[in-house]
Length: 314
Ligand code: NAD
Figure 1 (cartoon, protein in one colour):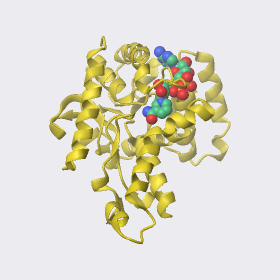
Figure 2 (cartoon, protein in one colour):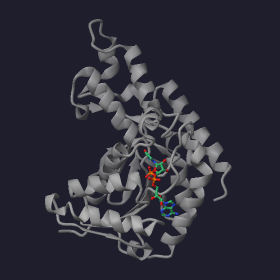
Figure 3 (tube, rainbow, N blue to C red):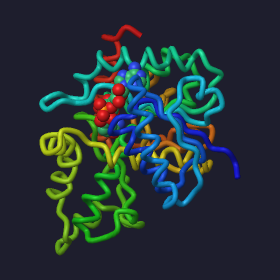
């Protein structure tokens, strides 16, 4: 079996939900936990190891340090401050920029030559910071983008249409945050456009319902934070899926935060767009001919990302 090694930097709620998903799904063969709180990674590694008897795959799980990045396939950065009640993801900007730069500084001291996935918020901007500070190939760096939001969208549509969310191909694009939008012109139930379903007289879903679902997807993190302070299971599973797509060379289409190199008429920015993900990272960005209002929403999201990036000392 091919050796697949994943390093998680940041063994908090998101990092450990990701780790737990991977242990349960047998995503990798070796899993290393790094955190500024060393005790935490020691305890978490012990706890996860105790579940291995019931896991689908033999795994080596341990508390490590940056030297363990040398031969890793993937480093996933889940370290950082979290969104407090009343805070937007953009409020985390400066706190987490400092943390990203210190982590990248450590990674650069190693011979790491794999793929970096960033989950820390605001994720599209933190992905840019990691890319800029590292100087690594842009194709080998991606953010979790709107993989979680797209899953929330599929869940919402699945509930409303009474179908398995996996039968829905629909994507949230743009910022993982307030300026995100649904590319409704490409939303399908199986092979049928969801707009076509909503336009039928006796349909179980209306255009108004679609607006409500889009709003809910955009704002649901605030509700979760109000109820239980922070969100982690959904993003943990989304990160496990991205990891699987890389390790298994799947060429899966995921709305990761990818670098735009003239796609959608933009460059020098990371933003969530449907992208083909494989063992080399982002194989390509899929450039959809978006409807006019959707393209304007993407442009707006990118404008916000760029305005914030200029405020940073990278
Ligand atoms: P948490 O507080 O539970 O964990 C953060 C961990 O990072 C802590 O264990 C802390 O010790 C560690 N850490 C801080 N600075 C570090 C450094 N320099 N090096 C190594 N480790 C360091 O937070 P969480 O709930 O796990 O959230 C982590 C990040 O993920 C936040 O930025 C949060 O906003 C983000 N998040 C992203 C998504 C998404 O969809 N992308 C979803 C939820 C949360």
